Amino acid sequence: MQQHEIIEAASKMFKILADPTRLAILHLLEGRELNVTNIAEGLDMEQSAVSHQLRTLKDARLVKARREGKNIIYSQLDGHVYEILAQIFAHVQES
Image 1: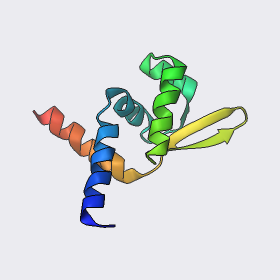
Image 2: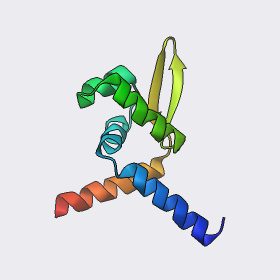
Image 3: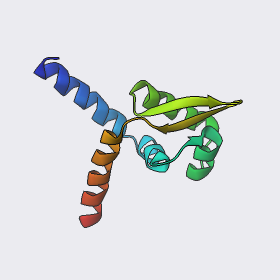
Image 4: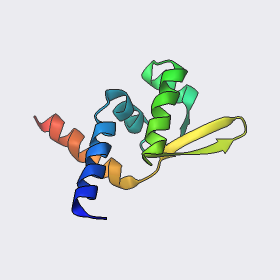
């Protein structure tokens, strides 16, 4: 991958992370697995809105999903993103 492609991909990732709802979902999923109902309740949102955001996060390879009976269980896919988010949250709290 060339430098400009890396920069474009990183920019797209930051755009995905710039959405407060997606950040809240990632924060909620940190270190645990939840289904859409649990996420929607935790964020006081409609399940359809949460599902839409989860699709975006899954397409960006920020979360993964597995089937458990009739439920889809979501969890973090890659610890790298959570390390970055932890640094950002720490920086914001210091301000």
